[in-house]
Image (cartoon, rainbow, N blue to C red):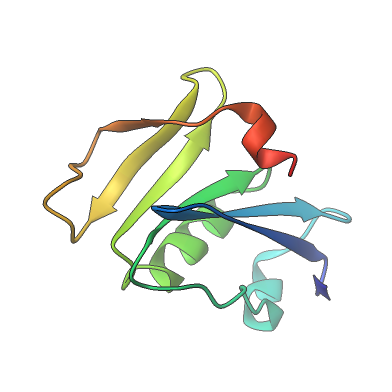
Length: 105
């Protein structure tokens, strides 16, 4: 469902949820007030994926801070880099392997 000019897709797996976003057009910082990220299970980690401005990633990382961990997908690394964690099983800088096909489901 579109929220402002940001469209979200949620992909669930056993240990984490992927929140992939796409922009329907360039957005401005003032649009952050209109964005409602999808609700997810906070008992799992979250992987953020999509092409957008760094301040959008910062907003989403802050929004999902209460989850087990927050990671950002980097296709060059073949996975998601953990950037914050509340889970002793994951540490900052860890790469969680994710196949790009997981993002297409």
